[in-house]
Image (cartoon, rainbow, N blue to C red; front, side):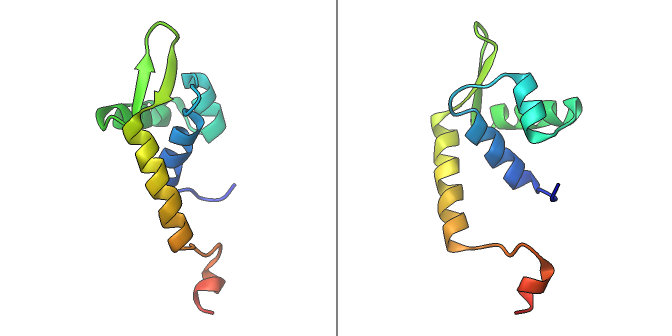
Length: 90
């Protein structure tokens, strides 16, 4: 598995939560430990990018989170990050 930075993990969690997702699925989909997952969920909720629905126990991406994803996709189109260090030197 390739290394992913915090930004990529956050974007992936928000993408997964667009339709609603449980804590367990987030952990398995993102290959995170329980502690890592809790840290990301707290961070995303603190910044109003993700919300938790008590009655269904589901996490959903907020409007602000969807805006973050839109900007993230636009940035990825403008700046294509190379897959390896050899591409940087070309």
